[in-house]
Image 1 (cartoon, rainbow, N blue to C red):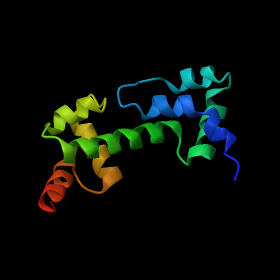
Image 2 (image 1 turned 30 degrees about the vertical axis):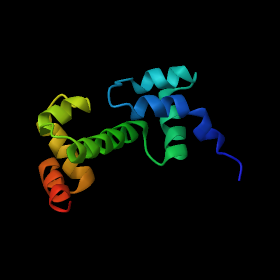
Image 3 (image 1 turned 120 degrees about the vertical axis):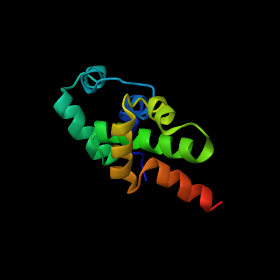
Image 4 (image 1 turned 90 degrees about the vertical axis):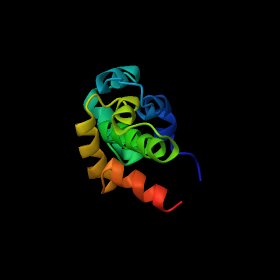
Length: 113
């Protein structure tokens, strides 16, 4: 089928939101497309199935999962690399999204390999 124009339209926003080192604001993304933040959030969610902030968090958690299994960085180093200022907050969020703590995730992965 034809590509979804909404997704094409937001590829720049998507790239910025999925970059763990970008702390671009939703209002700035909306301005980039000359629309209101509310309209941006609604149409982005229609295109990607997640709000921009959930998309950003999900991307950072995915990045963290890779670091946990592919590196020996500490949990707090990984939190910083994924732009979480607080490793406690990072661990809480990780557990909410993944269903287990970062340490448990790493150990489970290492024990299965």
